[in-house]
Image (cartoon, rainbow, N blue to C red; front, top):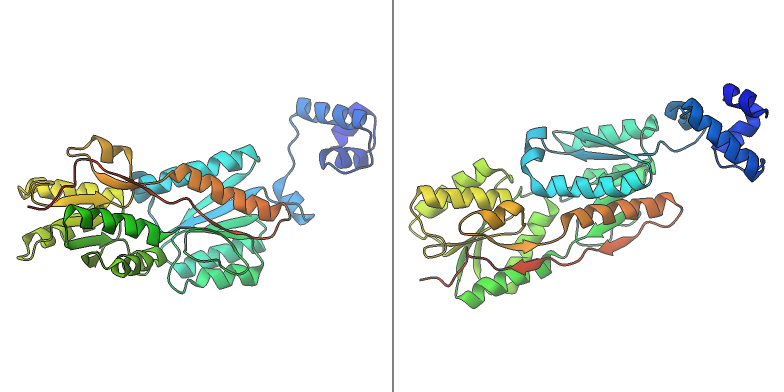
Amino acid sequence: MSDIARRVGVSRVAVSYALNGRPGVSDEVRERIREVAEELGFTAHRAARAMHGAGADVIGLTLRRTTAALGSEVFRRQFVAGLQVELSARGFGLALQFVEGGAEEVAIHRRWHAERRVDGVILCDLRVDDPRLDAVRELGLPAVVAGGGAPLPGLANLSTDEHAGAGKVAGYLAALGHRRVVRISGPADLAHTAARTAALDATGLLQVRTVAADYTGEAAAQATRRILSAADRPTAIVYDNDLMALAGLGVTAEMDVRVPADVSIMAWEDSPLCQVVHPALTVLQRNIADYGMRTARLLFEWLDGGPPRSVRAGNAVLVVRDSTASPR
């Protein structure tokens, strides 16, 4: 900053005012200071700015996933891609860290906040009685919850309507004539897993048995083998994400079970692979990248001085393909 001041012929204080957008210098001087700063390759030191109360220009995101799992999960990749669109437009970075449990997530949020590493955080995979909610409230750390079905006091929230999705799944399968259905879900302690289970039961249209898995292809394949080997084989199987549905489809080929003649298959999430496999999978489809972008916008609204808001995401669309038909 001293170098810039000498080049322009002003005080160091004037350089500070100009670079930090504060009044006290003319527009002409401000522009000249910025030109010289760019010529010299000046960038503000984030740690020094944080000591003076400036923002870190970073948003934090923790995920209970391995890096390998993120590579195979289309939902998370597209969600993060959507976040990056909005963060890049504002000149913000993303601090992404993989964790093994909720206690580790809370500890990371506390450390980020104490070190002023992030301006806010995004909470994914809301759990039943999630300890992260009270933790970020206690810290006063701006946080947006991506998911959940109801407003969360003191936090921003982009909620999803699992009842609408369950109604489309149950209504479609019931109209085809299915009554005995198995759903292979994500982890049982996830809030949206519980919400989908309750919503499917509430429709009263199907006899749905839910088998908890972990979103991986391995767990879904094992569960599918057990289900198709049982005497009371269902006429349809619904998977909570695309990866598990694709693994289940592979198992049907191994066991010489025809889809959809012997069993119908559908997924609660879509991906390009769901469209190119044979038969192509019937899905609930939503714009996941847009979901990530809207999540980031809610956090920026808060950081810009607005109140934390709860907004309902758009409902998923039922896309019928070749993997579903009326039962024999």
